Structures are given as structure tokens and as C-alpha cells.
Length: 366
Image (cartoon, rainbow, N blue to C red; front, side, top):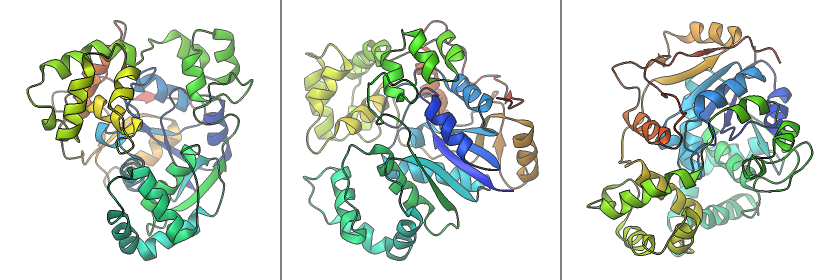
């Protein structure tokens, strides 16, 4: 049986995600971000709710990406997620993209020239941001040109790098509807950005998300709920450079900007430069919010839910992969669980995210 991996955030789950799940065959394993997203923002609804959405609409297994995989630049995000999916035995990786092309050829090129390409990357001028360096590398070695307007394509290239030489087949699927960051209230395929922006419009949400009822009935959060906590962390922390990926220059810029910033967007705008992109700054602020320090990634895979088919697959690999289906006294990943405790502060109705929570068992009938 084909075992397909999908890397996702489902922030929140919408018709485009349902379309992606419907296009792939066999067992479907989703490696999903936890309560904080790749670009450095809290999930609109918690990881359990989003896992349930996925399981009710086609996924067979949902596993959680650790915090230091979820909140990373594209290459590290992709590598961490692919490593987890490899442990779970996938033989193909499906993903949505704005530019359907031969990603397998790109992966093969990287497999042959990885050392040369990475050396080239490190020798590019420091005034370039990492995304600009990556674009230059891909153009030089493969002839690809692209812009920041195709974030799914950029992630797809990161997936190609992560899957290079693994034997995992790449299965690109054309992204449906509006662009990734579009705020357009499209009638069928609206972006997750648009749904978050217009979440108060229940009729719109029901039109563009098959999981609308669950989404609308769940506690919802945004960066605004955490900004006072972030401000407190910045103003009282004795040494911001002790935080993961915070260097002296960023620490200085953040401390200088926090006094005049009334919102997270104002703070990001004041700190960001050509070198420090807004996405990087947002991630760094997320690290500060949760007081993240460098840590080892967990060796075990955290399972959030499964269908009967998914449960059978997990049983078949149980002796080969360390699986965590319930967290008690011993932590699965201390940093992720610390981040979850901070996430819970964003809404009084948010439930405990780890202690004693049981895996979701779904009939997977849509």
C-alpha cells in the first residue's frame, strides 16, 4: 500500500487542505505543526482541534512536529518534518505548490551536488537574507527563478532538499484558489490567512472550510493575546542573547523598539531589516515569548490521532519507532510542552495540551 506523508499546519483546515488529502492515495500520514507555526505565530486553534479536523477529512495518522521543527525557516522545517515521516515509513511526500514541476529532478540534482550547493550558499554576501541566498543558489544550479510570492513553492524546494537521496517520491499538487497570503474572501478556496482575518464571518467560514463548525466552536487566539506577555519577557529578561537564535544585534534592536510598539506588527516592522526578514523576526519573538533555548529534538514521535487504518500501521512499526501516545510525568519534549503552557495563556477556555491527553481515535468517515 502507498504510504503518503503530508507536512501541514492546518491553520485552520480549509477546502484546499481537503482537496490535497483527496488527491493522494493509500495511507495518509500528516506531520502537523503544534501550537506555534513555521512563520512564528500562534495557531488560531489548538493542535488537538486541528488534528481532529484532519482526521475527520481524510488523514489516517496525525503526528506533532516539535516546537524547534515547527518554528523554523523552510529548510529546517522541511528537514525535521521529513525525518519524522521517514521514521513512519512513508514512500511518497505530497504537497501543494503554486508551481507544479519536476521536483524529483530538483531533488536528484541536490543529491548529486549538495556539498557544492551548500558551500556556494555560505559564500554569498552577508547583506543578503537567507531567502535571497537560497533563491540565488537555486537559480545558479537549476535555473529556477521565483519570488516571495510563491511560499508553497519555496517550501516545496525545501522538501526536495530534505527528501534528496531518501527514495521518497515527491508528489506535487497544484494549489487551488487564492494565493497563500491572500485575504480575498474567495467562495471555495480561500487561504488560511483570509479565514483567520474574517473568522467572525461564520457564513464565509462555513463556505470555505469543511471543519467550520469545529473551528467556530473552539477557543481562538492570535498574537494580540500574547503581546503583553512578550513585552514583559523583553523588558525583564536579563540576557536576550541566551534565547535561541537571538544575537546581540537583534537583542539590541528588539529592546530599543519595544517601548514604542503597541502591537506585534509595529514591533516587527521596527526590528526587521533587509537582513532580518519579518518572518525571521516573528520567529525570534516567538522564541522569546516561550523562553526557548537550544535543545535536542526528541527521539520519539508524538502521535495526536489515528483512524483504524492508521492504528494498524502504527502497530506494524511499533518495534521500529518510539511512539508517544500519552504524556504523563515524563515529558516528551520539554520545550514543546513549555511552549504549550504559554499557548494556553492565550484564552481562558483552552484545555490542558499535554498532561493526560489521550490520542484521538477517528472513524475517518467524511
